Length: 165
Image (cartoon, rainbow, N blue to C red; front, side):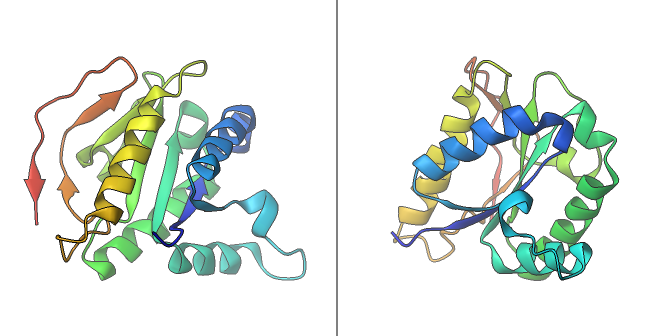
């Protein structure tokens, strides 16, 4: 498997959790585009975010109360939503911190939940990403099944799976 790339969107107020999540994703073999590592000081930030989102395979949004109040995260979600609509496949994956409320088009997606002290929901997300990437029998294997209304958490709660192609 070639290393898939992930743009990680989060609020800087959640930096401690975000760091643990990114380390976990990288340890699973993915390359993560992260603002702290990938933004150059001599170029406009908005432009670099747009280019970063365009270049990656997936965008994982760490949804939290802080992220819901962040203009930067909202901008990244908007760019990602546009990218997803153009690609015709799932690009944006919500990773929800705790019992945070999920808004907009993210609320219609499969939700992966984590807690500050429990990243098991992230393991489920990583496993599903790897499963779809490695599934060579499916010509649309790059996680392009659209999930609607499902919730996955470390506590094992799974609402009915609805798959669309």
